[in-house]
Structures are given as structure tokens and as C-alpha cells.
Length: 118
Image (spheres, rainbow, N blue to C red):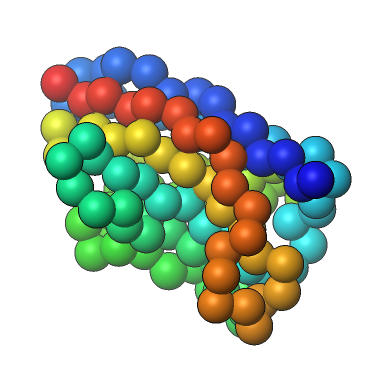
């Protein structure tokens, strides 16, 4: 099984920053089929940021310019740098990956890390 483990969440005040990490065991982020999702307690899961098949980063309008998705040099860790956080960023954040970029399904998921912004 491919294991993804998120870390770096916590409670911060508005305007502060967090850096989320997603460590992969049994998977290398060599393809551009990776992304971050979030779900607030009373809302549907939404895509936050993803790297597409062409290697381009795509962002939800609500986070564009504040959050940045990237991979570390080893391609074993997916990063979400979160700057200028706002209360509406409060959610459980999940990293995800596909087996193939052509798949519609996000096959691999982490357990989530909580971000709370006050």
C-alpha cells in the first residue's frame, strides 16, 4: 500500500503562516498528479492546489497568491506553503495522488492535518 502522511497543521492567528508536508512511503512524486484538498466541518471537500500533467500548478481562487504547492528535491514530500492565513482557511487538509495522470480518481490519500485560523 502507498502511505501518505500529512503534518504541519496547527492553530494560528490570521495573517500567520504554516507549512504543510505530505510524506510518501511507497510512492515518489515524480509525476504531476498530486494535490491538496481541504474540508471544513460543515462543507464539501474542495480542491486547494494541484500540479497537473504539464507540471503547472493550479489553485482555487480563494487561495491563489497565498498558498503555494511544491515538491521537495527528493520528490518524496509534497509541500503546501500557506501564507497570510485567514479564518476561512480553517479545515482538515489532505494530500492526494493519482496512480496515473489520466485517472479521474485520486487513489492515494493521507489521513489529514487540521489547520485552524483565528
